Image (cartoon, rainbow, N blue to C red; front, side, top):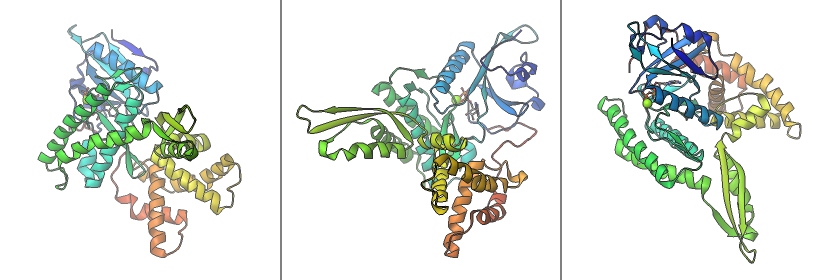
Length: 406
Ligand SMILES: Nc1ncnc2c1ncn2[C@@H]1O[C@H](COP(=O)(O)OP(=O)(O)O)[C@@H](O)[C@H]1O
Ligand SMILES: [Mg+2]
């Protein structure tokens, strides 16, 4: 009898053929969704409306990854959500089978190969790398050493024209109180090696824009990482009559999406110099504020965009001095929801609501520029649905019948 180790067991999972190697599972039990390159057999299954990723892997590795993913979840780090591990599997002849790690399929996520096969402008590659670098930095701030950072071990979700990256494979990870400089350097080194391989592979397959050079691209990883890491963690010294620099630093960190948990302020003996050292907590400054105000749980850049629209709504309705939560509720019901509802059902699976809203705002800007005056948001939404959205590919689950191979 297989044994289920799970914090949130889903009884629907019990009925899957655990006595059959994952590779031989009948197609009618599987959901075909794109996935990255992997060492292990990974498949997707559906229980009700929930889709799970199942990965066949040695027991101790499955348990290690399961526990780490739970820790990351507790730290609110961007990674896939673990569901459980199935151990003690035997096949119909009584031969032992490897364990299975179950995670929730990350909705609207795209493995990089799916992104590369559709949109491959150099700009897109840049944004993917930025998202990946931000993910490495966030993991390191949490004390997480990844050990195998690659595009295949990352999932991307659209985030207001940019991307938000999630860790999908924690098999080689380690969680520490604080990560050492050597471990950080090692992660960057593996990232470079892996990405070089992955980009060269795309290049060989004719999937990479000719203007993108894999070598140059990976060489920028280090600089991008260092820039963000030092902005987030480096101490800063200034004269006491420049205390506004403390404020500016906090504002810059917030702008980058990070909150400051505490700030160490040390003044020198005669009190003329100050040294500050911020301790930032995880990204999500804007998404937490939006969640608090509206209950919408979206990516960081999407939240920033939505909050801007909320601010201009407050200004245009002359409510800047009003209670923020009341105005936010009004904006939600009078602006956001009508726009999202105006997307016809059959187009619903194309993009997440917050991303649709972001695109409508972009489209509104475009129409307003053309018209030389402010175009109404609902009008922009209708035009967006007709002219832009209908032509986009589906990104939510479709219900295909056969699994996609890489
Ligand atoms: N929870 C999940 N949500 C979405 N995709 C997933 C999930 N888990 C795995 N995948 C897909 O399966 C691929 C392989 O998973 P991974 O854990 O990296 O396996 P391996 O340990 O064999 O490398 C990933 O690149 C990703 O595309
Ligand atoms: Mg992997």
